[in-house]
Length: 256
Image 1 (cartoon, rainbow, N blue to C red):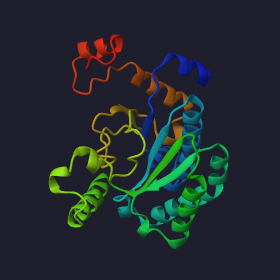
Image 2 (image 1 turned 90 degrees about the vertical axis):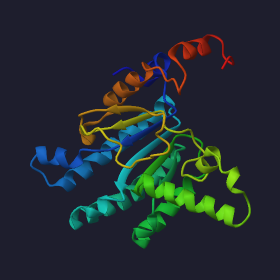
Image 3 (image 1 turned 30 degrees about the vertical axis):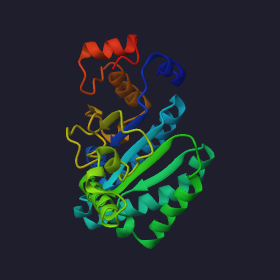
């Protein structure tokens, strides 16, 4: 694998990468291990992704760790996932803080044990002023839940007379979503072979480039991430324009 500085010089980097980390259970099954072993192995890939994105200048990395639907899994697996989440925060927060990484968690945290809620709050508070890579963990999160919460916030503004119904624009609505202070994802990656977005960042992924790989999450390393970024850099992002308009915009910025 080429050094990060060479990658940075040769490709167009996404500012924000969002990843569904899929395949932990199958990785373990392939090795005749319990599913929970796959989740433990997946933590290493999380660490690699954070370190690599920080090293090449990506601004934001959002990781889907636990969906609101994942509570349906076997109780033992859910218990292990919650314990792993807590242990990882305890072990990694200070290290990430020293690297100027900002940590935040999005999702309905009220379902978590009080100890985990406290650790989330502590990690967010400690790293709040950091100006490096923005790392977001989506836990007990669902895109429909997030949109519903935003609708409630906007409805409250209308009910309080702070804005009128006609003032509700896409920009106003988006400002009431999570992560409204950072760019929307440029690149979405899903590991594990499935080709769907599974209720993840439904609003924010509207114009995101999608990348699917059969690689299981514990095997998704820096080299795999580089392949995804190179694939992204070879695409033309049009945002509703024609290819010719986009090419002209590069030659004559400000024409459109």
